[in-house]
Image 1 (cartoon, protein in one colour):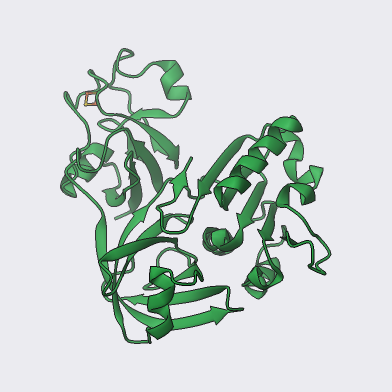
Image 2 (cartoon, helix red, strand yellow):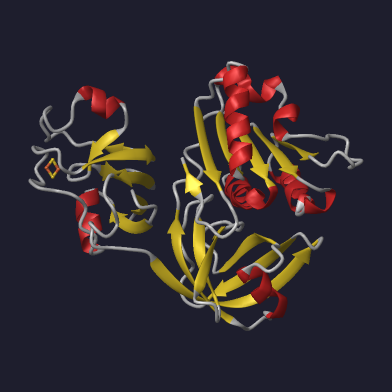
Length: 340
Ligand code: FES
């Protein structure tokens, strides 16, 4: 029997996935998974179960009343989970915390399989999850417990969902908790991971995409590009990857490989260091071709440090660029990412 994978994104950043059988309502599928989504009547009358469907196809049902879900709300993507019957995989934003819905993050035990330094600037950490492959949306992150420290650090998945082998691109920070552990970590060491988390993830691809990566903010885009490649996407995708120093440019071969897998994928790199011999020096905002905005018919995704996010927003404002959507994740070392 057909079933669909439904991602429930809670307002505290936790994502849980539930299997929804053909013809099953989302509220019932969540309940089977012991997740108590907000509800009262379960009859399409009260509107308490209102959520936002961010992607996917579905039948809204016809047994609810206008007071519970108005035409305008319906047109803006709101749904009643007690009535909604998915017709494909869907992503649903739930306006409640995971704890209020009596659920929380999933925890995964994993084994280190590879630690690969890149230019002394970053490390690719590859883990093999001991049980089932973690399910996440391309772009999301997980918290890795740093063994022996009692602390965790947040990193975006750089691998695509659905694999037991998962990877992360980790910025090397001298004296940093994770960087210090990585210096002595070896294949076979055990770590624990919680997640997935975050509202920075690839939405339905319906128009050209502009990806803006700052430093190891490249990681979520590697995951997104792999998802697009697997879907044989024909959509235009342009990635601008900006770093501070030449040696911070890592994984360029991995990006280059996507030009063979995605027919309409292009990318450029930018180095800020004035002493660099790189052909494109300066900031990402100085190397954004006007055509990449596609007259505003573009979805923009940005992952980078806060000054980069602010600079890009200012650039858009100064140049009258109004993209169809702008999703960003600000990250700073030692802090959980902030998404919008
Ligand atoms: Fe009342 Fe869905 S629970 S409308």
